[in-house]
Image (cartoon, rainbow, N blue to C red; front, top):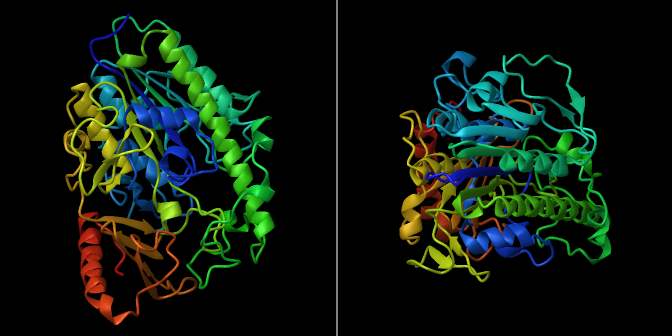
Length: 465
């Protein structure tokens, strides 16, 4: 039975950078189902995450997405002072995205990776299956949980996945979509563990990309030119030092393979929506928690402020979202070559919280600090944000106005370097030419430095840069 309110399908991937979707300019990776979603709706091509206070950047990012609260507040007042600890706990004072839709009468369901606390999960969803509370694991043998109505989840998993996690999560949400929801609309949250390492996928995807034919990124380096603060954490040790072209090409081939496999599972979910007659009445969101370097700038992980790590995909389609090339476009908004609308205004991933509320006619909680993207659907030339910032531990901060990007590095006593970088993203999208010492850009540096200080005050950043 088709509900009057739209259903919501929210999909969030792990480590999927914005650069690795075909419809967003990547000529190598194959993502036909994500491309079809972008062609049907809107792709926010300058979307960013807000960072975090520890190496597991996915934890604070997911806290922001699910609370609609900025990164230094999302943990809640009861979880201790700010520092290098993560945002594992989403404060009980912040209604979550799932909780908000559950309270509005939606049938809420979750499968896949949560990576935040059990209590916030339990108040968000009325049901779930194949739930993963951890950060990473073997995709073919993931430690999973059934939904426990009492909210008690012992340390030991209930079972191990018997197939690739992306396939298992697709199977699970498909069964939910096809089930009887009565007269309720549904809110289905799918937390994919792909394309996080280990970047393994079944055939034919595991051999889809020949490493020898993979081009190196233009900004490939054997090593980063200075200590950015976390050069020897786990993510960076996935490849040898110094990086070699052959090893990086193999990593990229595996990365693209698991992304294409993930895309195929997303296609299966779309098929289920269509077969059950719910596709046209479902708002579909695809995003990621953060990006990944995979060889760019001599780095492998997400613990940096370069675009490969700071920018993540955000694609929205369905009821209330304009499709194709309709509507206004201007200097900061234009239609994509695939037929969908590409919006170039600066956005954050957590902006999707109030956006979904507005699209579904659900009241936005008073605690939400994010800004709805809905005005951009009517006029994508609007300036949604003048600047976006990003943080990493007490080591790095970034501010960007869309063209210019300033990155500050801070030595914290035993790691990192006191240094500032300036990049012109318009002429140097690969961030290869540091202009910090160019006299003609002194005023730009001053402007961005002031904007960074303003951003830090706005988000209650406890670290002075």
